[in-house]
Image (cartoon, rainbow, N blue to C red; front, top):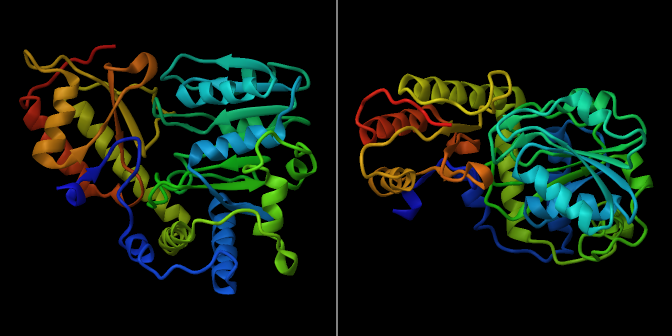
Length: 369
């Protein structure tokens, strides 16, 4: 049953078949010229996906949280002012990381489930070192406005979390004046978790912390390996098979076309959200800020004796569909449903809606908040 599950939670999506095949390729050494060519090609693909010309663009060895920590560790030092937009779990995590580095953290908050006010973010401090924002907040299904913040960021370095957005909705690093962005492989790229695509602007490279607290995540050291050409310097053993997989996943994305992928995710998201509302369920984010690839819905009044966890368990056991629970203040109150990467298919959405209708008794239900 494990191999037949449809992963529609906020975590990993089902991998593309091409990715599964890539994982079986013979392993090369991490300094083998053939592998280094794969690494360089993958980095080039990532530039296209991020829509950037940044030379320092590569797959960081670690999941999306490693990308987040690399961003903070390499750009933030004691006493630096870091403005963070907080309207969910991953904005909170950015604050935690910056705080551990001794930064003065300026929080700009919105209630969970609502978007941030871009003007409030850019006016929160007159001269921050870093402004950090989550583009697609995985804990709530809300899209924050990155372009408006980037256009008014001034001299600050702009860090954007694109873990759940890259490949699923528009990301335009250069046009949006983003100085560092990190993502994850397991969402809209349709690759198992294990790498964090990251891109760093020339301005951010000029301002990298000289000796960051993490040796492993030191972008100055890593850059000599990933973009060193003939003067390449060994830093760490790259996860060969995962980079094969990412190259394959990006190949699928770019062959489909970024705009086509965004349109497919949008169509699946609209189908799901319309279907949930037809069942009488209420969506969490306001219209205009809903992610098509990650839908949050209030848990409705359930049949007597049934909990929200029972519904998720029955979806998994009877239909092989995994959806996610709420986290933080939304724990037990919302479901998080993913349509990402290879999983973003009409048939998956229709199966989920049919399964929910069956479990909930084919009746219109009033949501709770």
